[in-house]
Image (cartoon, rainbow, N blue to C red; front, side, top):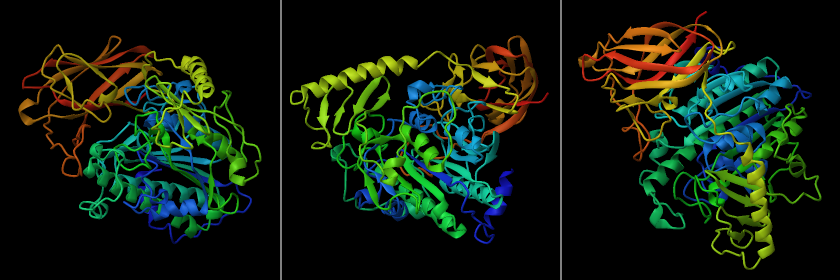
Length: 587
């Protein structure tokens, strides 16, 4: 369905009645915040902000008091999607291909689609861009958003809809919510249950938020601060909290619409975050932030609401994690698991229903960059082998190895075992980027995934959402290691910028002996944008309005090799700045 179609039906959301059948399987909505810490909600005692709609979910549903994810974004998403620890899935990085899940993994979307659900994802995917790593290849019928690890601009940016590049509409989180609501309405009017996944991209940087929210925080005196106040960037904290209030508003829109459609009682709503806070700010006194395997880096808020089916206002004390959501949601929905790989997660349904007497003692492992920490109900063993009693020392201030030597020894042995079993499954060998899958006509090859030689530079040290610049020499090249899955003719489009003084460069696109020659004939020199919307300075790349130019057709034979881009003539000072290459299978 087209982007404009979804926009059209939004007008009618409150006016077209929807009939819910009592015997229909429950709808499922999973909302994932990006870089929101446990302490970034007023329900957890933070009086610096107000999140009434998320707080209402907690009152009407079940809070998981100790819920654990990964220290960074893409691993958490992989664990939610598969119910398995991220090293088993092939995820070992947040960019340049390391964020991709292995293709033999079965996702939660595969599972719900097999059970007859319509499936849609709206937001930041961050588990692979080129099909079949793309969300449309991982069980989602509908996808709207961006597949990269972060995005450079949050106001009407370039996004994609089922692989085709489009321009977003307004503030990015509002836009994702609009599209998700339209998708839900379409399925409801068709009488089909839906599984809707909303992986938001805030409060991840860049710290951009509409004026309405920023005005509440720009000069606000904060009452709660990080346990080491000297580390805190107050401006960054204010921006992050303003973004969290925008999330809350959008959660409220979803909840209000469920009420308006009279389907709240037949819809499971899940809310959680992907890692600890992206700044040193108040987080309940816990140690660590995003990127850390300590408690503050991996403990996040998690709420499940299903009125009339699970407890109301309950706080589950048993430890749980992102790996548990797939088995939990399938059991609650009454659908079968599919796939042949064993899960690491457990179904939390008995805890949600209050029907369990003896819950098993368990361990949840956190891993990133070869650092491993393990959490039990009482203890955390950190990456350095230090033991903490989390029941009496939630801030990890007192090492208790001498007091509990047997516990320390046992958990150290468990970490060794986990490394031997789970990390041994991680294959870090380079995987080429897939091009030309028979089920998908579009393939994006962004600068993020490319390798540049010579003096060509990235626009940022962070590859995600970056572009290449300083291309001034004939001998310098840009190439992507790819695997062409289907022989045929492909249309090549380059997303570029080039000042008028530098037009006229000729260039070659080649792959395993096949070549295409083209030339830049039109100037396109838009300004760099983003700084004027940033509430605090960024380290990521700013962006430009890159223009597509059709370079022509090239024949690609099935196989593995480098898609190479090199200049043949540079009449001006540079070739061009490059954001991405878009390939479209023609025949």
